[in-house]
Image (cartoon, rainbow, N blue to C red):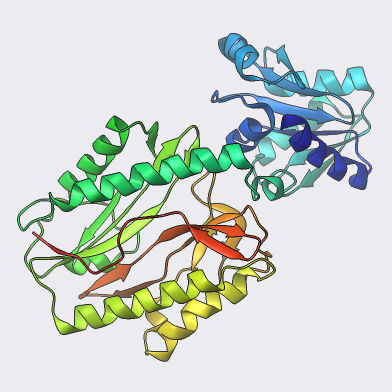
Length: 358
C-alpha cells in the first residue's frame, strides 16, 4: 500500500526532473508514512523515503511507519531536510507549496542554497482522492457513527432545548460510540439562524415551528464523515415543506449525476439548475460538495460551479445543496457518496424524510 503511494509521488518527481519531495502537511504525511503525530516531515527520494521527527515522536514514528519509510530523528525539521539534500547531492527539490509558509521556504533556501526549490501542488492530494479498501472501511465506519448519532439526537429535539446542548450531545454520543473526535465543530442552527450555513450552536432555545439544521461528522481511524439533516420542531408549514422538497429534489439530482467521467462542475449544475429554476439560485451560494477523507474538506473531487476535477471510481464526496433565506431560516441536506464504476453509492443511511419531532 505505502509503496504504491510513494511511487505515485516518484512519478511526479521524474516528470519534474527533481530528486526529492517533502511535505509536512499532517494529512499528506499520514497518507505517505502512516505517522499520526502532530509534527514531522515526510521526504521522498527517487529510491528511498524518510520520516523526519524530533525526539518526542521517535518511538511513535518507529511503531507506525512502514518498512518503506526510514525514521530519522532530527533536532529541527528543516535542518534535517537540508542534511538529506547534502548527503544525496540534491540539486533540484520540490516542496508542498499549499502547506509551506514563505518563512519556511526562505529558511530551507538558506540551509540548502545549492538546491533549486520548486513549489508544487496536489502531488499527494490527487492520490488521496481515490480511496483504497482500507480507507473506505474506515470512512464507512465514520459514516455509521454519524448516522447513529442522528438517530439518537432525534429523541432530544423539542421546544426549549438550546442549540448548544444538542451540539454537545452529538459530540459526546459519537465519541462514546467509538469516534476519535468530531470531524469539525458541530453546527446546529435553528429558526432564523438556519440562514447561516455554518452557524455555530448558540444558547438559542428551539421553538415550535422551527426548522433545525444539524451538520456534523465523526473521525474514525483518521477518516472523516460529514452529514447534514434539517428537521422541523413540533409542526411545519406549507412553505417549509415546499422548500424542503425543493432542496431534496436538487440533492437527489446531484447524487444521480455523480458518475465517473463527469466533472465537478457538471454535477454541481445538475442540482443547482433545479434550485435556480425555482427562483432560489441566489440563496444557494456555496458549492454542491467536496471530497472527504483524512480531511473533512478535500479538493478531489470538489463539486462546484468552477471545478473541472473529473470524477473517478474510489472517490468519495459530499452532495449538500441548501437554500438560505435571511430572517426566515435555511435548509440543507447532505450525504456522502462513493463513486463507483457505473455511478455512485450513497454511504449515508439516515432518513431524508422531513421529520417533524418534539
